[in-house]
Image (cartoon, rainbow, N blue to C red; front, top):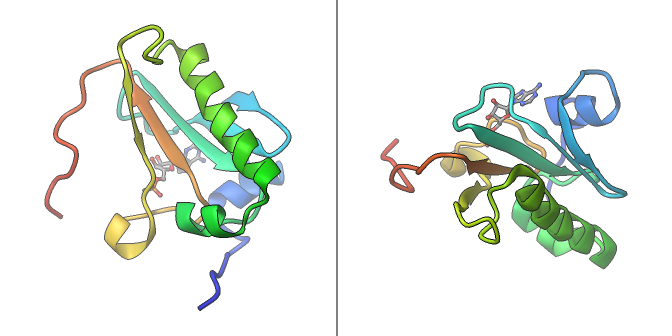
Length: 125
Ligand code: AMP
């Protein structure tokens, strides 16, 4: 079944400039901005500019250029935010998808969380 993308989601509106955001990094194919309700001292959302609903959608259908840009952007943000293992504290990266993943916004995003020790990886619903 084809993936379906709703262009009225809030991150699509951010990409169109209809809603402001606190940008951390922008590249050709990627935008990263601070989460409006941060769950950790560092909480950055990284989104592709293309219309992908989830990580599997992106991994299956994005171009090599988009995938490389997105992946390299994550490395740049980790370095910029001081959470990279190069700086040694580390981080957690999460991407929720669909109902079981409890995804709120249906545009692919990874959460980069750092600046404190995280709790258990998965909690019961
Ligand atoms: P998820 O549950 O994985 O879909 O996460 C969606 C995330 O988007 C949540 O952590 C929200 O706090 C965040 N969020 C929603 N609206 C905005 C916004 N306008 N700017 C920044 N973050 C947002």
